[in-house]
Length: 142
Image 1: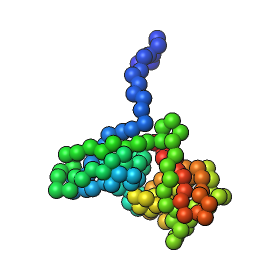
Image 2: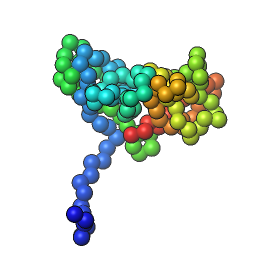
Image 3: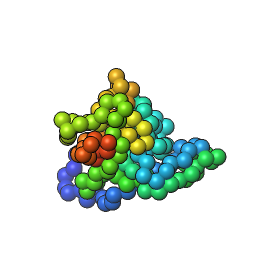
């Protein structure tokens, strides 16, 4: 049915999300956090089917516990936040020419210019490259 008057949608404003942590998993504070096909949070890893959420606000140790036993607070890129992580200097590093483009998730602390023939998920948008190129600034997609 189409609206025939204003609709007052509820809104939650914030720069964090709480995600259920995968079974037998530890996520260290500062790590890039993803959810896999099962919807549970893990440290970032190379795969085509993960969703990047943001930066772990804390360390959560869910080892020896079932999926969802604990939640992790993840700082997301709302409010135009950007975060500094390692550049893939031993593989295909991101450079100045990549600014504003897509970067790809290599692991929980490294981003790459290469999608590895579709094997890597989008890590976000490259916002800056530090002098020397060892570190990059990224804005996460969510």
